Image (cartoon, rainbow, N blue to C red; front, side, top):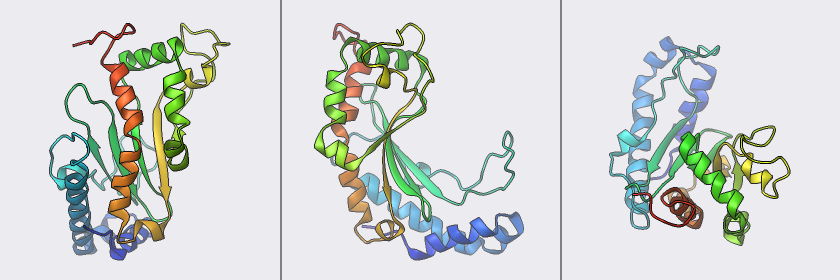
Length: 226
């Protein structure tokens, strides 16, 4: 299985210090080597992980995000990211959520779940939590989830519209995103077994994604929406 090369992290460290087009053009050959390393990593990750989950088929190159930044609406006009990332999406309407990996010197992590879900999905999630928060809490408090992940996501300062401020599950209802994250040191990310650890980490979160998929494809009475 493909290993993240030290040269990949060196390029990302270098571009952090030299984030300009002339430097990038001069070092495009090094970028190409890094990109090929990450394409191979992405392809091996999808191939290995597809044995345990139903993933939308795509090439490794297609699954990677571009290094070029969209600076149109940003005060930061540096043209390139100093990290590389990629994603895998669960296939079919019945399997919701996705997987994300972020490779950056000093800030590598895996994430999965629901980042900025559609308003209709967020309402269904909150309605289910308000009706019975025990199933989700049981999953989030399970040893495998608790020992592996931290729950992240932007939160409202007060209760969402239509829910009382003193609702017993207000701590969960305030979330606008529900994302499980696990961080890695540079040593862990560059380890030859990192890809295997990614697969193991993503598999550990299946109870969370499967439960969320269930509530997002059924109404509050348990009837299928499709």
